[in-house]
Length: 288
Image (cartoon, rainbow, N blue to C red; front, top):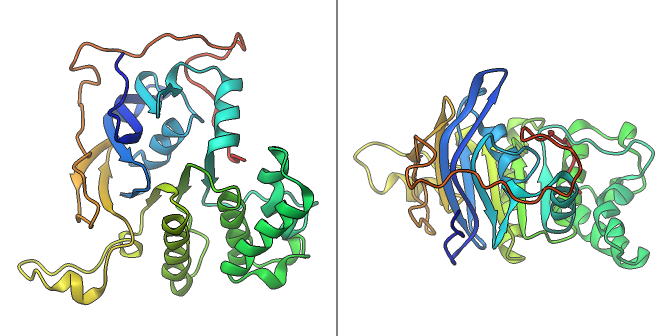
C-alpha cells in the first residue's frame, strides 16, 4: 500500500465494487487535487454514484485503495469513516433528505451544530448560504412547505455551511427544472472556489457542466462560455473513459487501472474499529 501523491487531496487506485455479482466499478483510478472541481458524467447505471460512495467512505471497495490526504479510507472502520465524513466531507444527493421536523435554517445549520459550533454562529452561516442560494425567505419554513427545488437548495446550503474539505455531489441538479440547473450549479461551483473547497460531482446531464463543442472549431467552447469544472470525466459500465473536455485546471489524473492492482498492491487490511462491519460497507444517504 502506497500513500497518495503529495499534490492529491483525494486519491483512489483500482477500485472494484459489485452488487450481487454485478460489477459497478471495474478498476477505476482517480486523483483529485486540493481546490479542484471534477465532474463525472455518464448515463444512469454507469457506476457514478458507486464511485462517489467509495470515495466518500459510504462504501468500502471490494478491491482497491481510497486515500484522503494521508488517511487510508478503505481501511477505516464504520465509526471512523462516519467521523471523517462528518468533520471533513460534505454530501449532496439527488434527493434533499432534509429532517422534516426542522426548519430550513436549522437543517442547513445542523452539520455545524453537530461538530460543536455555537448556535448563533451556526445560524449565521446557514442563513448566509440560504441567501446565496436564493432561499433565504424560506429559512423559517419546514421542508413540507417548500418546493422540491427549494428543498434541494437547502440541502446544498447544508453541505456548504461547514466549509468541508471535499464536497461530494451526486446528481445535485436532478430535482431541478432545466432553467434552474445551470444557475444552481454555477452558484455551487463558484462558492466552492471562493472557499477553497474541493468538489467531486456526478451528472447524467453533461450540458450542465460542459460547453457546446463543435468538432474542428477550437473557438466554439469559448463562445459558449467556460466549463464550470476543471476536469470532466466520462464513465461507462463501471469504467472511466478518460477526459471529455479539459478545463483550465486539467492535471491528467484520469488514468484507469483495469486490473486494480497493476503494481502488486491490493487493498490493505487495516484496523477496523472493531465495529464488525464487513468489507462491503453500508450506503448512507446523508453525510453531515
